[in-house]
Image 1 (cartoon, rainbow, N blue to C red):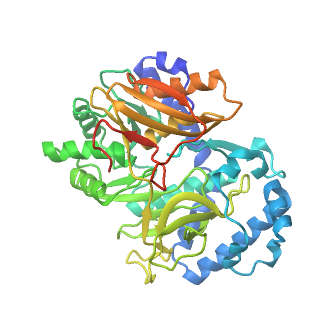
Image 2 (image 1 turned 90 degrees about the horizontal axis):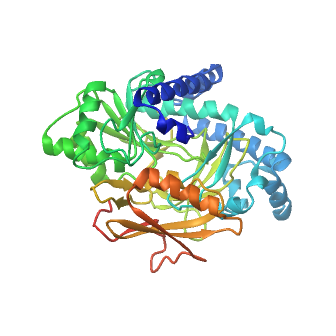
Length: 465
């Protein structure tokens, strides 16, 4: 949902109406006959054998690679250069013949990854935000859109015992309430989808009791959102001994969920947390079941675990997640380096939930980090990253040395103009006002002694999860 200035000028009641009208439009778009068809496929596939999963994946892989050879310029050139023939693929392991794809390759030549046999009018444009600070435009085919929302319903919500027909609260990155607003309501209602959308940008000791009262009044069955946004409410519930009895599940998304944060959220809300892993690139989907195991959704992608030389690691060992999407024909990614880490179990002995979906041992994403605002609000990396949907930014880093300001290091292309800078500052001010923002343009961002770059460095407090 793109929010323009006119929205913020409306009274709250009309903002709620606008959000609900948009929700009604999106509900019709998401939950159509194609959605129902692919939902049934996902439900049926939950209980087929591992051998059948592998066979189905191989069929999807061959079909995708043939499509890439015929219609996607980047892969046409790559396959010709390395002498790779998709028709000769006989095993999933044959993927190893294709080099790993880096995000920078896509950023430098995005049009080369778009299928030439499909109309742009049949595609949906989305943007990554990610804590790398390097935004990437990704096209989804309209048919793939139905798969995404079928996944949410069957594998994500279904595993948690809830559905899209249940009342829910969201704590993610949309700026439906500007950061400058000082008084509640810090949320808006989407009546069409029984949704209470709560701001991730107003969470401090003074405001959190209002959030709790709103949740108690709305009575959602579940919450979905960033753990960095949900955990402060959980801490308040623990301290105050208050409760929200209607909530039976919390779905954590878009950020690394540590054991400590999971424990806090489960204790505060007195229910189970379900972890979800996905991305705008949609090269992989992983969801937690009611028995506490992570399951890969094999229809969406192939997840390889590689070492630092791009060789497969033994099951049980953590490595880099390199993934191949199997369903999005508009903009395919083959052997895409996600920047996250994970591991398969040494032995997949099945799960007590009864699903035969492959088990994933662990997800080792980037740790949560925050900016601290003068009034005590903490704004997490996932929420902040939604401001960086700006063209011509290669890389960024946020450094906070004082409670009233933040420095943003930017590596930009030659096409980066003043209007790009003004747009970025405008989006950030919606989220972190009244922090003063200072931009510094650099040729590269030094990682220091760390192999992995920290996107947010906050020297004002010890807050990192």
